[in-house]
Image (cartoon, rainbow, N blue to C red; front, side, top):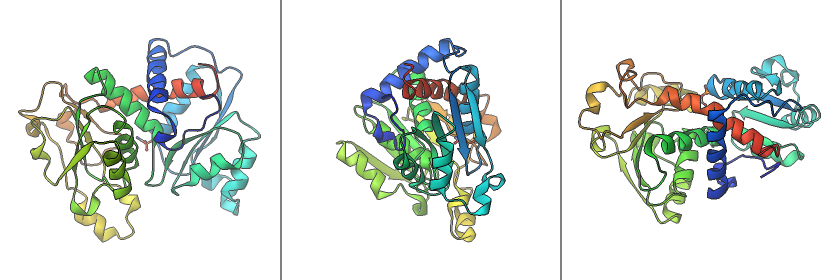
Length: 303
Ligand code: CP
């Protein structure tokens, strides 16, 4: 896996994903090993981020590496009209690996084809978010003790939610996953992602009401309606508060149920849920440091 870019979650086999999760356990036990002291990582965020950018930067700093980059491309020569190709060509001269987030689907793939510097896709438009997927898998395995035989409900914006697309594809690799897809009719999971479920010999059920699944699911994966992806703001207004989870709605749910959310949340989980033992979204965000350490160490040939 040395020098292997991660653009879509299915760029890595199931065995490779499991190897990253195993390595992440090592970093969770010991996150401050100075193994990156000879490395420079570029962090290029053309779109806003809190968790992905800062957990990458924390992961690198804790491992003794150096970070260069930007969190706002308007402060770079992109503002003067520089192409993505030229930005990537240039940054690859200054770094050993590039982490990038960009609003255009396919931009990370394009960057990975320009030269040999490995690229990690930190989110490309509504397409994929494979490192979020790794921490989601890690969180599911940690809370359920397995990645097989699970009932997992995805709730909210399944059309534009890139974290959903990556996680559905990844969970299609595991035995007997049962997918429960809960969304407004306008925001159903794209056909291209559903095809991964079908081609894996698995099945899914679509719902519009969250209460239909509450009694039997193991994982409730809540998502934000992605306002920034709507071409027409009026369409967003129609669906923006479709699902708001509160504590009372969790009555009768399984003991092992854990609520995940890639965050940021807007209104979709009431703060009264935060103190419920089934709420796992902040621990989930912390797991991002360990899986990103594992991924960086693996791609740089240090694990
Ligand atoms: N989960 C996630 O991608 O969060 P940020 O947008 O804050 O990075």
